[in-house]
Amino acid sequence: MSEAPPGAGADPGQGDSFERLWTPHRMAYIKGEGKPERGAVGTGCPFCRAPSLDETEGLVVARGKAVYVVLNRYPYNSGHLLICPYRHVAEYTELDEDETTEFALLTQRAIASLRTSYSPQGFNVGMNLGTVAGAGIAAHLHQHVVPRWGGDTNFMPVIGHTKVLPELLEQSRELLASNWPQEQS
Image (cartoon, rainbow, N blue to C red; front, top):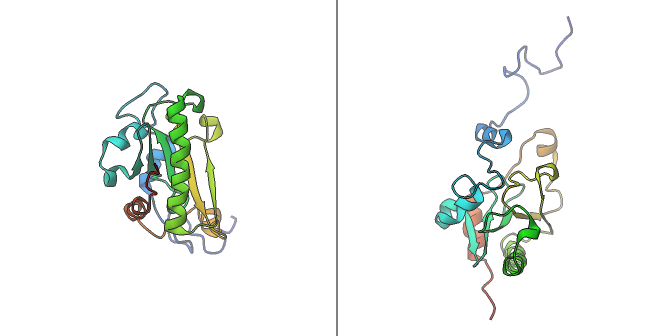
């Protein structure tokens, strides 16, 4: 009989030297439950549903005419924003000219709000088009704007599969909305 590694309990889930942060609410996300399909518009799509809610409940930071900005419910870092068209489209090439222009403008404003709110040292900005490219919700186009700091990737996500966020999503939404740049005429 082989010996268990130091600190390991006899049965998985039993006492050992590891601390665990349980996040059972993420299992639905991991399993892909409730993910909309390409043609599924409306309440089946979280990006169609979010702008119909009030700002706090929907985590909406800013609204344009064709595009809006929302906090990611499963953020990589505090302030992780998503730029989404109101229209349910899957591909960047499906945006019309007005949507494309506003998409770019709200991305610029998102970066400005994040700079004022959090003073990040850099950003990841981009889209994952299609499930195979890593899109968690491929049916509704969205662009990520993720603030980054030196050392923000540490042992917790790599070893502990845990992300430490220093504030609640509602606090992030309030801070970013209060620092959202005003439209220039």
